[in-house]
Image 1 (cartoon, rainbow, N blue to C red):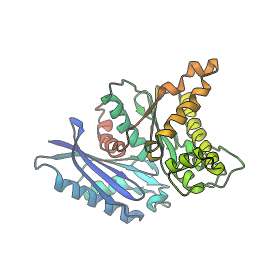
Image 2 (cartoon, helix red, strand yellow):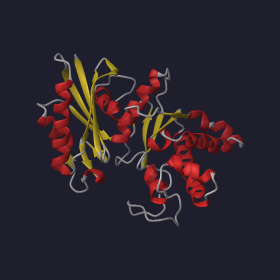
Image 3 (tube, rainbow, N blue to C red):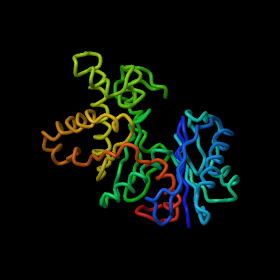
Length: 310
């Protein structure tokens, strides 16, 4: 059985899956391991995850590709600026290193949010959607988007397409870890909430509803920031769908409702009605393995197989 492996490498854990090449919706193996940091640790950790997945695959499994989603800038299989993995110096040619450790199997490395965009597209296709213009907005620790335009993943001239979390939202705001001031992800992300509030987003909403003024301010900044990110993607790229994912929104129904209400206010204008942004928003279900699934599908995308073009 031809099999593809996908690894979603996060700052804390690696989520690995194996899927049938002809039925990517069918998981035939799944594991989670702690992430190892630094160049040597990342290579060793990914190789060990592959070995652990192989043990759990059926005896007739034939690995035809391995895909890796990594939180950093990726170019030609090499990773840079993946600070959560301890990679912020020389580029790490992760594709070549893992291929050498796995007997020459084809390895494709992609930014994690871009990889998850393929997983999100697969989910939309399961729901009967025929879109090939898609922005996947990940509201996680940070804020970033993956772009699929005319069936192709968009990387940009320097691999930074979709890094909207570092657009300046408030030029008088605090310094972002990136070095700029008042970046959007300081307000519209999990780390943005934690920077200002000790609890979860759901607890933040509860406190705001009871009249806590600080909670109300942070809540409103979170809502407006995510709505702004969605609007940027819809107006700037005119994609058919903005698929929103990430624990902040998945775990907080009140936040999703508030975002749609905020977007709906724009539709009181003639241009807003024409744009119809709230109609384009979809929510990826909590727990959907879009990152690992998209990583597994990277090999198919390279081969021109599936509802996308390489």
